[in-house]
Image (cartoon, rainbow, N blue to C red; front, side, top):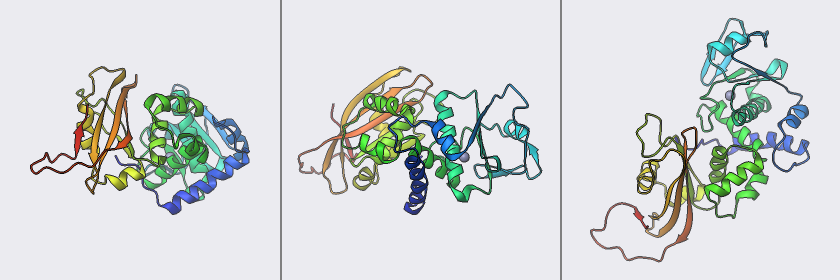
Length: 313
Ligand SMILES: [Zn+2]
């Protein structure tokens, strides 16, 4: 899945709203305090548990979950949550955000930020938004969900504060784990956001184990920096997987290996990258590729392999 492409105009509008919050909080240092955002925005955050009934008694008439519209007849919120297997909900009338208390702490943080995203975009106000596992995934592509996710990312990473934090640094997965800790966000979302804003060629992959047999997507997210797109427009996740398979171990936890490799750009110039992968306990694998250097010009030899990448060690 390619990164979400929102138009620059939409990004600007969302950034303006996020900036109002960050200014309202007095440009805080990371990590962002979500309780302070709730107070500033006069939002009413609440948890529910799927094992308990009766926490939320109001009724709602229509809920948008991704591209689908549910419940044209008034339905108890609790029934809506159970029927559509919702993990989070934004109810504009009460300025209330409901989040499943059984979610992992990092997922709760993301879910609250996503619902805050719905709440600050005025063209989202016509709906109660119900969110399931899918719509809460960064990079999910229905426009309104992608917008809420973009807002969530910009808010949790304090916009330009994060850009200053990660630009001009040679990153490794380990260094991004530290950034994640500073911002109290997940390692996965930190990897995603970092590559997205980098002004040097870089890409990342978030997905299931690259070399083990599994049915899940090995390249659920393929994130590239803008300079990478310019230099290597035809390099895709299938090419990236070929590189990863040259070093990736079968183990299911911890570092899976690393290597360096060269990519030829459109004009035939070669660039050396380093790439590494790490298996998280819950099964996802994170991969980061960053530029090491531009290689000296080589004279092309007739009959050379057609592959546009070369394994270096
Ligand atoms: Zn949503």
